Image 1 (spheres, one colour):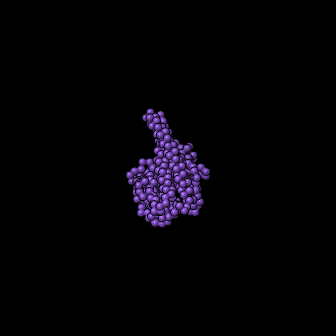
Image 2 (cartoon, helix red, strand yellow):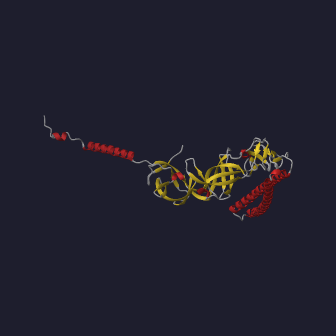
Image 3 (cartoon, helix red, strand yellow):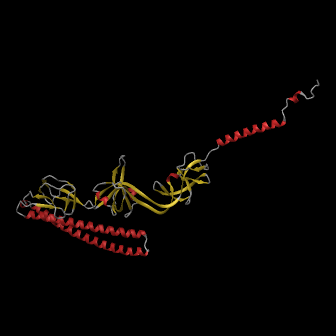
Length: 415
């Protein structure tokens, strides 16, 4: 048996080809495992909502609770002292000017024994005659102003057809004409009241001059409308000047709102008003007629003293359903204090503050880029952009805390 010429250690050595293959497989598995781990540790893009900047109208409003009230109301008072008969009218009853008898008063003092009362009655007649003359002058002035305003409105209409007048001038002329017509109606109402008061004072004077104690003074309605409130219902001895009932026209309503003085500064006569929460499905259109010059102090529900101003608005062509509104009904008013037709708008939910600066994340090639902006006015939903972005730029809406400058993001797909 011949001895093997191969050394023992050579017999246990593996072929070179098999060892190399095993190394390649091992390194490949290890490298693949590292790639898998790296991919798993890699930060994935954050899903976000995007919105684009666009130009659109922006209007700022002051929202406050308000209430309706009859524009022209009249409190009927006793023209003389005496025994008043029971008032049979109730709130809501219709009355006719000069026809409906509200109550009757039987004089209870002999006029022959009270010369001072007679002198006072004569003085009241003179005062009411002067008030009637003043009411007549006010009516004449109101008619003159209304005539001028209507003439100007007709002239503006012709310019509208030619296209040579701005929308602001057109609205101002239309508003002025409407307000002048309302002033005429108010002056006519005041003249009727003055005539009624003159009749009442003359009737009281005649009763003073009469020697008969059985004459009864009938208190008639000075204006047409409805009874709003009865102050004195039962028969009683009444003093001259005591309020008996209140009359007005519920169809002639205005809106009264108590606005914070700092907000009332920005309100202008003629500003658009949206009347909401009045009971109908859609809001009512109104216009500001007057901002009262004097403020008053009111304590809020939290116990804070506030300075508020009364702002009065007129309804513009109210629908049939709005006739159900009455005196002192609660409503909500939104008064426009600023408007721009072509404002660059960004959703308010895309903005955040960093120090004293406003910023937003802009979507740029799959990344969130923090951009500093200069913003203007806001209505709570949309904000005016003055500088920093252009139309069409996409911004992140309500970005989560994980979004930082330069982080990869992807648009969220809404299914």
